[in-house]
Image (tube, rainbow, N blue to C red):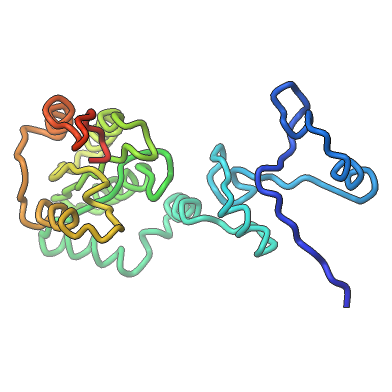
Amino acid sequence: MKKVLLIVRDGWGYAPAGKYNAVANADTPNNDEFMKKYPNTLLGAAGLDVGVPEGYQGSSEVGHLNMGAARIVKQEIVRIDEAVEDGSLFSVEIMKKAFENAKQEGRALHLMGLVQDEGVHAHQNHLFALLKHAAEVGVKNVYIHFFADGRDTPPRSSLVYLEALEEKMKEYKTGKIATVMGRYYAMDRGQKWDMTDKAFNAIVKAEGIKEADAGSAIKNSYEKDKLSDGGEMGDEY
């Protein structure tokens, strides 16, 4: 039986030589010998080559996953993108029931999640697709719980994403923003249950600071609130 050794050199890539190319400028006699002596090829490390959307950078995680599987493993964001595009997302039984119950019984449909375009944990296009579908099937009461990012996006960028969402709400003639909160509260995974309680109570019991609209809530927080160290308040909080 022939044995094969897979060695992963994190951070070692290929790019045209230049003064800022550390690999090309370094003294690498072993690598040079390997390239001359043995067959070699290049593997894409970003975009659809590693199962993330076109234009997105790869990562250690997705790179290792694709190499270990010996095939392209589509990440969740790509699978959801494709399901939205071909319509199969709305054929999922639990999804169909949610929209049908909201329409037939006059119930509210609640949508919650990060609103951003970095594709980390979420992407706003998926929310837009849900809004559009709600309008198409006749769901009248759609409430959005806006989770601001500020960690994988610039710390004070949520007004940009809010504007994009409001444009879609206007276009589809549906949707109302019910709550606004930072991901620090809404998506805590460090067992800070007091934070989770605040997010839960805001969404379920409508507890929290009341504002005229979502934009005012964000702007007022920027102006009035401070971090515990006295720093400026950002979207994450």
